[in-house]
Amino acid sequence: MRNGEMLIFSGNSNRSLAEEICKELKVKLSDVTVGKFSEGEVSVKINEDSRGRDVFIIQPTSPPANDNLMELLILIDALRRASARRITAVMPYYGYARQDRKDQPRVPITAKLVANLITTARADRVLTIDLHAGQIQGFFDIPLDNLYAINTFVDYFEDKKIKDTVVVSPDVGGIKMARAYAKRLGADLAIVDKRRINDTDTEVMHILGEVEGKNAIIVDDIIATAGSLAEAVTALKKQGAKEVYAAITHPILSGPAIERIRKSDIKELVVTNTIMVDKKKQIPKIKVLSVAGLIGEAIMRIHKEESISSLFDEECRF
Image (cartoon, rainbow, N blue to C red; front, side, top):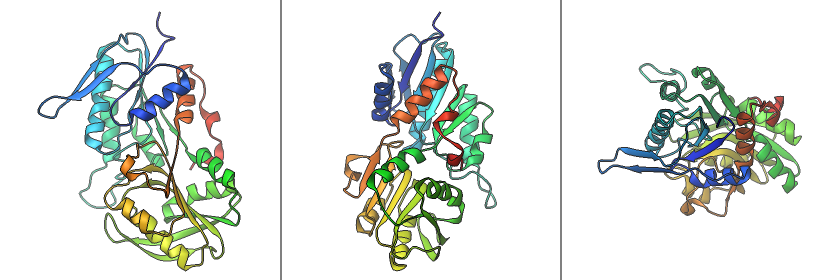
């Protein structure tokens, strides 16, 4: 009987995180070949016996999102055909999540489409961190566990012993997350009232809350081009904030993001390794924290059929 045995596979999206998770769990990363055929199609071959095993695939669907999503789907299919007992898609970053509802005519709901694809590929469950929108959990007809990076960030900022802090939500939609951080840090709360100009640029209208003479910590789940962050930092500085930090889970850092961060007055941008940060993007202002321990603990609890609710308390549920 192999029902008690666990295998962990990784695609090409974030192999370094997969290796860290395996180190936490004291297991070896399972052998798989993930490449491409000459015309660009994804090629997968499982190189070890997975029949009857409890399988976990570490594969955030980060940029290049299309390639990484296809790798995940094909890995699931290959392992299903290899008779794995259970397949868990571990997606520290869930891509295509920003279109989670029809907010305009004739637009897709890509978060639901991706959920359908993963379910159709016959994954048994999904494990992710800081979903862009909580309702995405309801898009799945299989179990989904959404972990939170709040404890990782709170531990970091508590160690820095920053005084006179105010937690800042970059928009109205992030108030619940910001409130959770403010409660954990014993800090005040402020909100950036902004207007989106296009997909990459925003204009800050007002700062709601008292930030003068305080150290601000902006909290969010995704940073892409850093346009919103740069605008928020400038606005907070104009309102008299002392130092401005940011705690953002998923560092996409696309387009002009690095240049905007470099030129901004931000003291430090703290992110996690749910998405691999390339060496060319590792500037002094960016600090990367590891979530390998959090994911590793969740994987072990799932494998042992134990509850993972103890990994986060009610304050984290935003």
